[in-house]
Image (cartoon, rainbow over all chains, first blue to last red; front, top):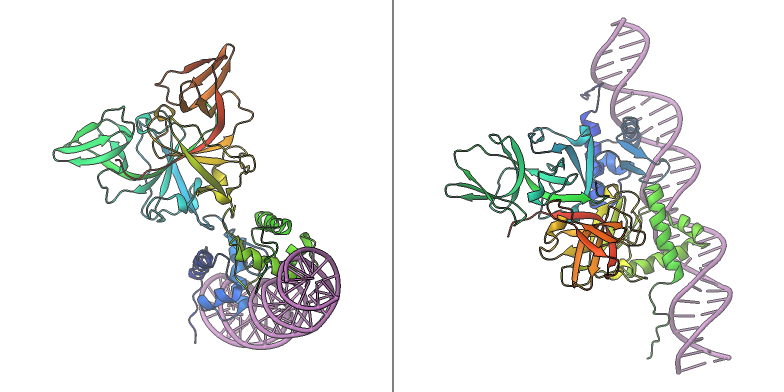
Length: 225
Length: 225
DNA sequence: ATAATACTCGAACACCTGTTCAGTTGTCAA
DNA sequence: TTGACAACTGAACAGGTGTTCGAGTATTAT
């Protein structure tokens, strides 16, 4: 007797496993898997069952299919297609407002917008999935060489080291800012990216919330004003 | 034994046509064409001949093939795979040096380096193939909000309109600079991106070479030096 | 219990596709 | 000319692949 688990709403475990497999297979082989390969990995003995699930995923809008064409399927939505990384834009960053940071279980499914970045542009191995992006609003980040409208890609701050650019919320000044971070013996030195600006010294006693680490800045230059 | 190699010259017209077809087919269908589809488009009546050319393209390193797998081919090198655009980095841009501009027949095959940009990030319809990129060296572009190490993506200048950011070579000042361009009645006004800097006025008589139009700026934030 | 629904199986089928092979043609060198 | 070789043809073949169908099994609602 087999134990079969049914879940009538949303995606089941099996749907997710198939989705994950397609994504990882695509990354490794540069092309989608066949129905039989999916079945083998997901312990589905019949091709018709895989087809059954694929149909559901297609109806759910998570998959596109070119029927009749071998391996003619592709993920939609959060696809890290090829060597691209889809980074969710969680909101805006501006002087007078706190920075929106990702919830612990955040997924990019419900992000309003997202930017796609080639992994080849990513410094180091920041290719983790926990990256998020914010759009800069206002001219308050000019000392960080960041303009109105720029998109900053951030990584949740954990181990911030000296010399890294971080997004900081200074609660007493009610200000959000991007600065290079240096820990010194009596506090922190926040160094603007533009050397024409002076660094800000923060005493150890003052509040300082590091929200994220800046990984990349993208500026679409369109028109002045 | 003398073995004369005939026709050792690179790609023939047919190779190029096949390459182009694969690229356009991939863009349209989201998956590579089959051998027979290539043959049909390129007026090759036999699948074996397509296979014949595909082998050559593979040997030339322009194509990767997963034999035995249906449509298991992918372009390498300048691939606009998926929604990515490969932009060649032609050199560096710095204050004391002229800007390297693409030759009329420039191809990205011989570019030392290149950056990949998602087309979804491209403003307007600058998705033309004539884009090129330069790496900024030095701090001389600080008034344009561009830092040392930044990558600027440019489009060859043809129809520069007011308010667009352009790369300019001021031959009398022996200086390269990036400014917003405004044509005025007695000359040109070059406006820095950073409003804290004053605009530069250029008389009509002074030499002014517009080398390109800035489309995008990418900054990989690593460490503060 | 009964029916309805969700899920699974295995097999057969027809098509698509890459491969292979025996020949043909045209060009160029010796 | 002769030989070598690249370009090309047409056909056949073998395997991969999506599809379909009939049947069976589990879960839930009534």
